[in-house]
Amino acid sequence: MIRNVVMMKMKPDFDASLLEELLARLRRMNCPGTISYTADLDAGLREGNWTLAIVSDFVDVEAYRGYDSDHEHNQIRAELAPMIEEIARVQFAL
View (cartoon, rainbow, N blue to C red):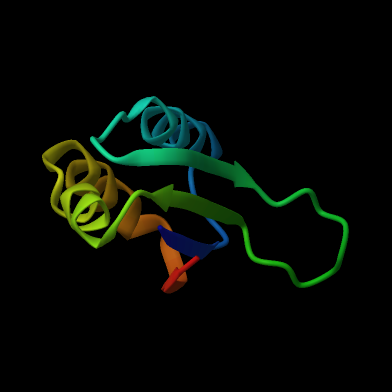
């Protein structure tokens, strides 16, 4: 199993309603081999946290690669890109 973790820090002037729409679209994705998918805004419990996180689990590397190259996923990425100040990603085996 592969876990994918993404954290994004949005630019100060990001469009919050557009971000919510894009997160909803990400949550609706159903790529083959996806076990679980969580995408949400930071709860604001600590100062200095990033804006949002995505945690997704896939049955194997090929399922992750399918998600990574998925057309809808990459369309959402392109719409998010102008709002992102920083992004961090990691994938690891469970």
